[in-house]
Image (cartoon, rainbow, N blue to C red; front, side, top):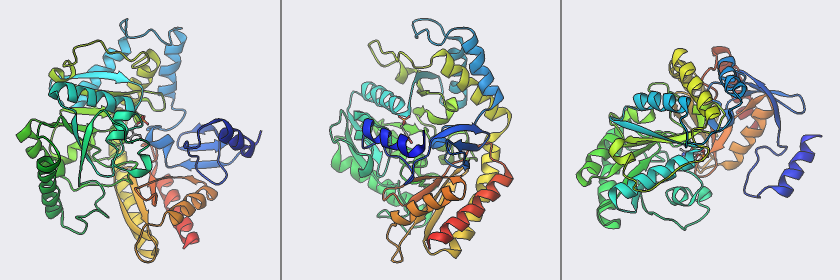
Length: 428
Ligand SMILES: Cc1ncc(COP(=O)(O)O)c(C=O)c1O
């Protein structure tokens, strides 16, 4: 059956708000390494990796082998009523890697559930339902996480169990403090944080939550050190810092294993998902034991941390550390950023090139500098025609996002740069 028929059936039976990429949506049916093949037989270099989730790439023997070994035991699921060896081993590894002292780990199935859990912990621990978040944030699709999502395009409801106040520091390219030096930007945002605390809260706020680099928001990178300046203010009030590492975790930013480490600060709570299972559903929370254990009731996730997902996740973490994939992300990320900045100088539609490691955003603009979602969409189509899959995002949907598997090679980086140059040139 062809892809057009499948797209029509998809639209008939699945929600209208479940958006598909491309005027002619594709179905990926085979994959290996960083390349995927659609049902029409076209092969693409994948620079979005299932939204940063196929962290290592496709058909990796070490990971498929770990999953197969678990399947061969006959045990796909037991529930957390019984001991799960891989879950314990994975929790030990993540607790140690997290940098959080006296850490405990809870496993769920997604980034949304991870952040819902973080909010549950923080609000219970602090006995407050007030939360601070960054403007232009994205933290998930359930009620509490939509409540702390500062991006109209993803705010499906205003109903929320938490009372949120938004602060600056997310989308530097267009926010109120654009154009300032790093030091002045940090000062302006920190002053804003104090002002928001004083004017929109009752002071006893539970937590501040932030993505160290905004993902859905368009790969916005705040100046290094911003969250350390914030933490000084938060500490004056006992407010917990939650680092949402759903996109920035596992070394994707190259220079560090976690995004928060660029700021010289340690969070109280850290959430993760996406890349950990290299495609299997897993997410979770790390927190200091006194925060994690503050819930005075039973709480389980039936599927969270199941034997198959934790086997895949353990193999993924082992693989990316043994092969120094954060180092590869740093090296090839620098190459891509430099190449894209050079491309950007030749194309007026490129307003900004930004990112760290293998999280790179290209913001497209109209002649007057205003956001151009039309150009971003045309680049998405043009790259696909030339054999490259990329992502989109940003408050105005005008940012093309690049986030290939962290096993990317030098030759593939060159290939992507050539395609992007031609694709952007074609829509000028
Ligand atoms: C930073 C961040 N947090 C949370 C989420 C929600 O994760 P999930 O879609 O797995 O629920 C996402 C998803 O894109 C994300 O980017």
